[in-house]
Each structure stands twice: as C-alpha cells, then as structure tokens.
Figure 1: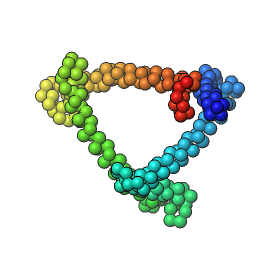
Figure 2: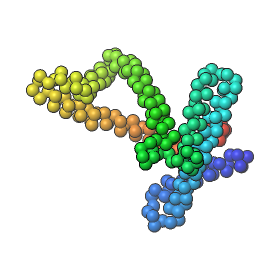
Figure 3: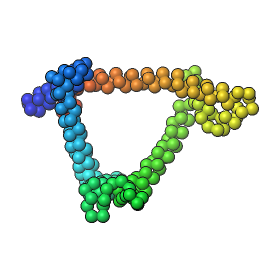
Figure 4: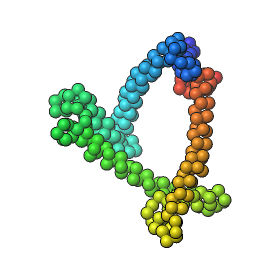
Length: 232
C-alpha cells in the first residue's frame, strides 16, 4: 500500500512544493535552486518517455481496432501510416542513414524526405482541417449571435462592428462619410484593446485560478485520480 499510494503522494508533494519554494528565492539560495534545476531536467526526461508511452499507446489501440474491424478502422490505418512514415523519415534523417540526409531542406534547395512530407503532405492536411473549422465557427456564431436578450444584442453589434472594421468592404461602406474609415478603424481597435482585452483577462484569471486550485489538490493529495484510485 505504501508503494502504491503513500510513496507517489509524497513524490508528488515534493515535486510540486520545490518549484513553488524556489520561486521566492534568488540564485544565491543554492539549497533550493539546485534541487529545482535538477527537477526541471528530470521533467524533460520524463516528458520524453511520456511521449514514447503515448506513441506506443496510440499504436496498440489502433492495431487492436484494425484487428477487430471496429467503427472507423479504415481511418486507423491512415493514422498509423501518418505516424510511422514521418517519424521514420525524421529518425533516419537525423542519423543520416542511406539517402536520408538531415531533416531540413538540402543546401541546393531540394527537400529532404522529411521536409518533403511536411511541406507537401502535413501542411496541406493541416490547412484543410483549419479551413473546415471555419464552417463550425460560422455555425456557432449564428447560434450565439441570435438576438434573444440585451447581452446577445451587444455581442451581435460588437461582432458586426469588428468584422466591418477588419475587411475592405466595411471601409468602403463608410468611405462616403468624412473620416468614416478612420472612425470605424479607431472604434474597432478600441473594442479589441479594451472590452475584448478585459474579457480575455477575466477568462485567463479564471483559468489560472482553476489550474492553481487543481494543482493544490494534487500536491496535497486530495486529487488522486492519476493514481487510478478513488478519493478516500
């Protein structure tokens, strides 16, 4: 029971407490800074092994899905191909194995196998995915901007002003008014730099408080879900 519960809780407490304490000391406090620096290096090593564990988990899960021919097993094949090919090109290029020399484009401008895959496969797929998100954003905006109450009306008006102030069509619509383009651009910048920034800061403060509270729960041993155990 000690190795399964008490020891992980103790290590978590120390790993969370050391950076907090080190934050309040200068570099001269070697007794605190040295363990903190060593802990940061260990975190990089652990993160590397965590990535490897994640890759193994993804491969095993998708192989089982293909074997069982579960829903969407065809996509699992392409996922594994997309995982293995660029990873192999990157590893072989990093060690200069055979025709795989480097991961960056060659000196003569010709792409390496890895950079070719990134430029002509990964980036077009990424652009396609984000372009598809535009339709979901438009659908969400249509539902959010329905005039139902005062708050929704203010949101709709602010969105219309910002959109008009960011596109040439909006500037041309107000071009016939003396100083209209300047006034629209100035008001748009004011909306983005003041009310919008204030709302963003409120969201960031709320997220930071949530992260801090969750971190304290983990450090103090209240949150134990990462151990696979229910809270006692």
